[in-house]
Image (cartoon, rainbow, N blue to C red; front, side, top):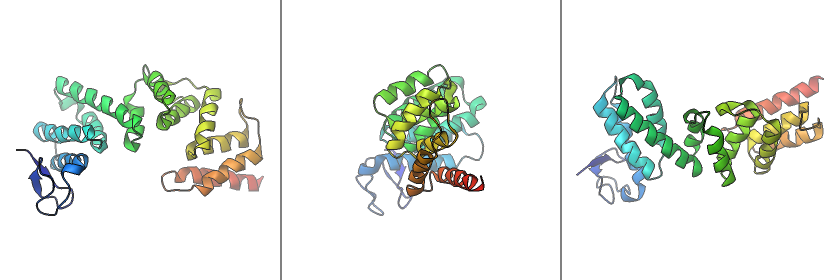
Length: 233
């Protein structure tokens, strides 16, 4: 019988239990969170490389991902990078294959952590095809990464302002503040695709202002800088 850690009271309980016998936490209905927490318990016990503890942490984080909790993937990803030289090569390859597979699944489901990790896991050889395929399926996260690739050359994608602008226009209409900032700056300065238009620049800037939130605070800050620079001219 495998024991897991209850996320609520941190007591050990049977993996097969319907709920925690100590606090009543719904173990059966929250398996992803339970498996993630159990993996985290083993991971937090590691002060230096310990293959046994890492294997236990990764075991539970794999189960967590399979139950739609992708937080462990982030720790698995950085854990394999930190201990690259100390993992047996076969074990390392198995972990990375699993991580890459489930990060793509996480991105496809709209998971926030996976959305950013995929930039590191995609190689220049497959980034464009992967992101284009996900974008064609309507995945907004992939569209955002693809737009960033076309506008900044990340993920080994060749800069293409025309394609970047088309994607950012669609995403901005859906409320994406990064794309709104791209359009605000493009209209403010003018590009090879967008003619200078301060009215439209501040239209998109105000969209950022009205949707201000902590996650995209830097977009708001950049917009405010644009406003201040305009006042000084």
